[in-house]
Length: 71
Image 1 (spheres, rainbow, N blue to C red):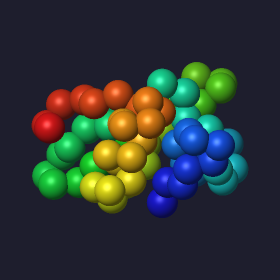
Image 2: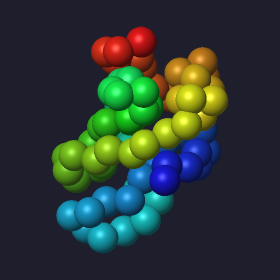
Image 3: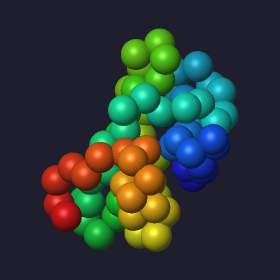
Image 4: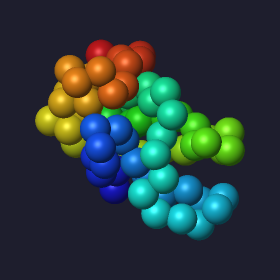
C-alpha cells in the first residue's frame, strides 16, 4: 500500500526489500478500475503502488504525480 511521506508517493521496493521508498516522477494510470502509480526509485529500479481513488486524486491535485492513461 502506498503512503504519502512529505507530500510524495512512497512504496515497497521489491528489489532492495525496503519499505517507504520515495517514488521519483510517478505517473498514475487507471487500469481495470484501479489506480496504479508507477515510477522509479533513486537507483532507477521500477516501482508500482496501488492507490485508492481519493488518494490518487490528492496526489495529482498536489502536483506529486501526473495523470497517465485510462482517466
